[in-house]
Length: 129
Image (cartoon, rainbow, N blue to C red; front, top):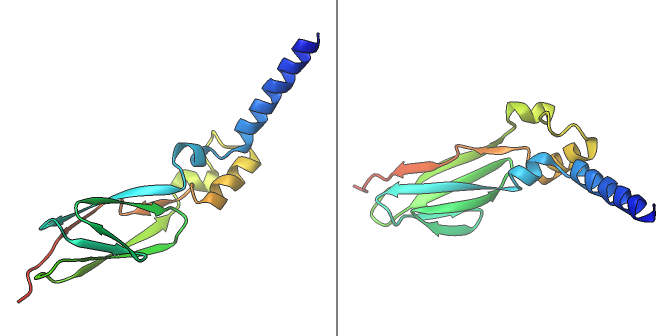
């Protein structure tokens, strides 16, 4: 009888832990990977003070409203792109699988409910004149 009680308590704790966590936080995470490619390759990519070199993948927080991305290479005109945060249609209703209020709060607080668009950057740099 004691073992059954412990088992029931353990199952209830696991169910609560699962229900209290955010569904999008688990499935998508707080960060989004944004691939960046340029023609020619080897361009410097600057976003939020971090530098990358194409081709690359930037790991950005989903919760930030806007990212200004600058892509430059010596002998070519620099270009800029903007990534913006959007809430997918399912995010408004929190998805059918995440009807538990604490899970919804976790998703919104961590930013996991959002997506960044565009989901990838492909840039052709123009040669300087």
